[in-house]
Length: 209
Image (cartoon, rainbow, N blue to C red; front, side, top):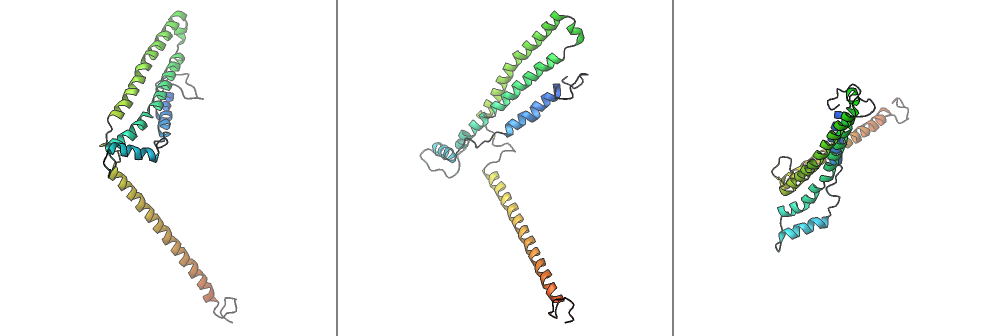
């Protein structure tokens, strides 16, 4: 079922490996994207963190310690969707085990029950260490924030992004103004052309008076 080769595969719902793929690449990713980093972060929180990390001195730039104080709770918020992903994968693996029962195995009820019990115990034994591993990964990310990562946007990177957005907006406004000016000139030319055709002033446009 995991490889998608089971002959009795359902056509009405995702099962087996397809369901696991959906959990990892859709449900889990949507859960991560649904986290709003600034939902519980106010301007006052940011100001307080900067002041606390600056001590008795006034701060010209945002101290790295203040950044870490603010970002660590946000990293912690990734744990809930990650643990939910682990639980959903565990449940799906249990369903895969139940659906993978062969007709030959069902002919021996005691053996069948024994196999199902062993598989269930194995999955149950593994879900705990997996959850612990997820907790460890989150703790590692909290302990060391890699500001040298190429995807990390620091202070200079943020300024560059703002400058790019401002330049794009300026070009869009200039283009819109140019289009409006051309449209206005076209309308004016069309209006004056209509009057030029009727130079005899009788309104019939033939110029014969």
